[in-house]
Image (cartoon, rainbow, N blue to C red; front, side, top):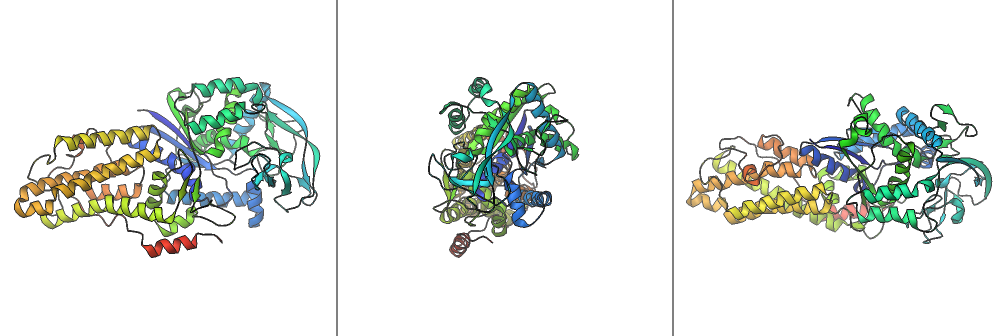
Length: 569
């Protein structure tokens, strides 16, 4: 049994995420976790809410609530929505947990002892209107590199360039909007990433088969311009993990907290301890420490491209720099952006479909199928209502749903609700079985390789084979002349249903569960195709399932297109 540790980039606490956020990390991570569990492997799938930093403070202030109260409430909201999308986390933690406080402070102490943290006196933006220092995300302006007019003080989301607030053109406070900003002196801690450049590059070069998107971003940060830069790990904020050196106070750092980018990835590890503390597991260290058994774990991370620099460089620098035997990531699956109907999703303008809204209008499987089968892997992709309607109606309703409905209803009408006896044991030629075998193994390989769209295409091809068989065999016509032969054809077609259920479960888990329940079997990953299509013996009882997928009408499509064009309340 292989062991797979899987983490998704942890979503910010500041509100409900849109579908682009979902498909960029959590959903494909869930796909991979479900697939590995289906193959009988041991999986620990962790995620959490990212609760520190300025987004949390800003959102709490807007909601008129203390930040701790706001974060607790939004964690519950995000956990419920994740459950609605059937995201199968073994634990959904919180970066504000005691476990993450202690572990973050521990790492800081180890890095300091290794000479990898330095104290810097620097000037930082101070807002007279707000009466405080402004951390990077409290400052926005125009990117000097690409001209994007909403670049933040730490990074431009458009071109991914690392920035400092003073680099921005026409900066302003995101709290008050004031441009009355001045630079004042303050002290902060920096992680000496530059000292680790060669070690990080050598480590990245040992990673096998990483997506070009992942490695190209990492190499760009390592080598462009002046190369990898040291990075501030503290901020002048009230909300966050207090700066300590292990369990000791840090002279000169009183009243400061660790910068969110430093503590957030450490939450992946802390989340393992939270999993144990919640009574869900018994030994988190066997997943995270190579001296405690994690040397045989395969660790895969899923994230959008904007998170790649922190996961390929800064978080590995933290782990390597600690000198302790922590498990490092084996594979980083990164995604481009999903755009919305000719533009971008916009939280501020309410443009696009947000996760709670999506579940209000259609069940999770509809969204899971479209998002995964159109995942933005090699380039940005775009959600359009026309494409969504066509994909749902054709793939889910016409191909999979129609096949199941035709077979089970015809069998009930002619043979009753049990698998009929009679006819040939396998009423198909060897070429059909060979093709089914090839398609199943291609699907497995694409899933192992985390090629999400190709896996969806291979799965759809397997569904299509069932419809093509029905069209060619036409048991409703055969029955008129040769009921025995028709019985064999129907039995074969019925046997495709549990096969489809098991293979489809990572993509559309609710539909898969309905199919397994209707066919009265448990989930069993197929061995050979020839054996899989003989799993249900004659006389095996089944039930006709309810309609799996309803079609999206033109009226619905037009209504939703108008509703989600903007102005989310």
